[in-house]
Every structure is written in C-alpha cells, then in structure tokens.
Image (cartoon, rainbow, N blue to C red):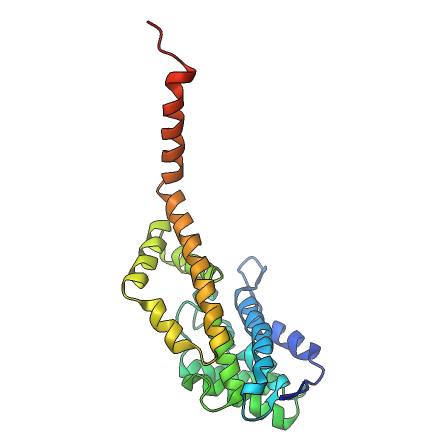
Length: 245
C-alpha cells in the first residue's frame, strides 16, 4: 500500500509482546487486562495507518505494531518489580517516565526481531507519546489509537477495575460520569485527543453509545424499570381483579 512501509513478519513480535505483557494473578491465572488494551491499540493503529495518504512520508508498519504493543509496557515492568499491584494497571495516565520504560523494554525485547532502523523508530515512537506523537508519524498513529481506546463502552472495564480496587459501588460510577459531563470533560478530550477527523468522529460516536449504556446503568441501579413495570401492573389489577363487595 502506498505510503506504508511493508511490515516484516510480525507474528514473532506479537508472541514476544504477549509474553512481556501478560501478568499472573496470585492464583496463577493470566491477567490479560494490559495485553488486551495493547493489542486493541495495535490493531486500531494499523487501520489508522491506512490514512497514510495524509502523511508527508512513509509509515513503518512494523514500527507501528511494536510501538503500539509496548506503549504501556511500563505497567508490566513496574508490576513485576513489585512497585505496583497488577490491579493498579492503567488506572492512572502513563507518565513520561513510563513511556521511557516502555521504550526501553521494547528495545531489549525486540532487538533480535526488528532491524536496527525499525527498532530505533519504534522506540522513538513510544517516547514521542509524551508529546502526543510529536512530529513523528508512527507516534501520532499510536497516540491516536491509544486515545480512541478511552472512548466508548470499553472504558467501562477500567472504571469497574478502579471501583473494585477503591471499594466503590455503582452509584460512584454514575456520579463520576455526571461530573465529567457537567465539566465538559469529554468535549475537551474530543478536541485535544485526535489529529485525524475520521477518528475524532468515531470517538464521538463511541461516546454517544457509551452514554446510552450509562443511562441504562442508572435506570437499573435506581430501579426505574421495576418502578414502571409495577405501576403498569397496578393499573391492570382493578380490571383483572375486581374488588369484592
């Protein structure tokens, strides 16, 4: 495809990244939270890269895949070093230090799989996320895909993890959603998070779907559907069960 540098065989990159990013629960089960996020970002980044005609130079597809998979790898590093518990992963924004750690792990882990040029470009793309991708094409693509993952129903899983960790219930989730709407948080995020208009429009559509989910969550949490059903049935009862004189 014009505008995209063809990827090297990438199966090995995905396999290596999965080993690096899948953690273990105390019971020995795999914790796939970080891996699934990173894999989604990589898949979406490849689709965003098809907008390559809008870029001034060629996109290195292998660098995009590697950078996408390792952009949040610092969380795995910190967890394995005992700095954080795995339940804290992705509950706060990744910092500049985190992107540096992710880039460093990428360089160590993929040195035997990528060419020196591609490896350097992939690591630079991760580091550029501190500037939302800066002027680097691969970094811009990864930033776009990563930001998109914050929008829509998928974001609810992170909210649930945070609520479980902090001992909060459903009402806290609803209240947080209302505060973000009140302070126009999502309006600002839509404005600041995307360079490419088709992706911004997709994020806005995802947000509308998420709002419908949150309305349904509020409806069921407050029992409004049960209240309506009971009211309807109560109106039927005089006709179905006439009072005995």
